[in-house]
Image (cartoon, rainbow, N blue to C red; front, side):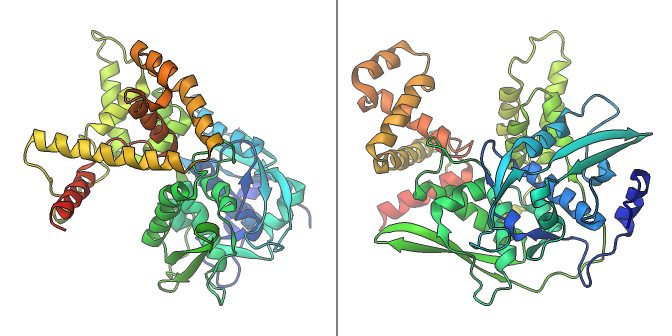
Length: 453
């Protein structure tokens, strides 16, 4: 059968039938694309979501195509392409076309044993009249498995839209593969194997999660909590230890309820409006994604509007650092994603500014203790690597601190808190050093428990 000509392909997208009994919001994700390991650059959350939507449309067009074409608005919205602002989406396609990945199933020997390529072979944006068309293709060594998989996980793109971190999305995709297994268990792999698979970042000697304790606290627990919250899956971590040390991990997974029966409808495209506006305002794309995850679209949109109003005040000095200014606005508390119900508002654990400052100091003391313990758990080589990184780009522009560091290193009572804050900024998520009222409640309760055991 001859391939459809390019103008006919749009109709083909809408008319291609689904598999029997398969709802349109389910993507057949091949097993050897579930545990993709980046070999060069980081794969961002938005890029992975866009990639999944593209794969959904390509599967509907069929494996016989050389290239795949859809109206761009079916993939992503929120960007004004009648201006020159196409750089936002181009960056995601560059990431897909240049980031080398190893393709593998979480289960050894399942699907294609091993393959390496980029996520896509090429991408092009083509204007046809008033429409923008996206064209792309896949590498020959992975194309057939992508578009006509024999073993796959059925994942909901509606659930994907609600997962706001890379680890949560990657874990959800993998667990979809095993939810119908009789054992209800994922494949067992070393915990270090799971690290790049879930974070979307290549492994390196300077990676943030080289210690299992940190990886478990900052990646695994948060991803499991999010998947359990927004999906129909219930996931539980299973640790396998050798002595006291955790060696391997797998996950126990089952459905809370049967899959929701929904009306057949088109997949919602990924909304890039907020990220696009942030980039136009001078915020780097990866930083815009992180702020979006942390604060939500509504808060960022309102803060960007406030910053734009500030730009228009010509009698004032220009904003020198748009990112710092935007973060200051967001951290001020005047913008929020949504108003929380009154019953869920966290009570303030203090009655005065002095009491609040005391709790904040207790909060930081606890964090410093955690960071100190983390540092002590590292071997001597890792410790020296962190100290060298601190000496190179972590020392503040303060002569007293620099001179003390040269004489006493991080053993100095002046230098050690500065070093620990540097370490915290490197291994923990942004905002760890800005306690919320909920954090202060925990500190207050801990102090009460210590006083009244």
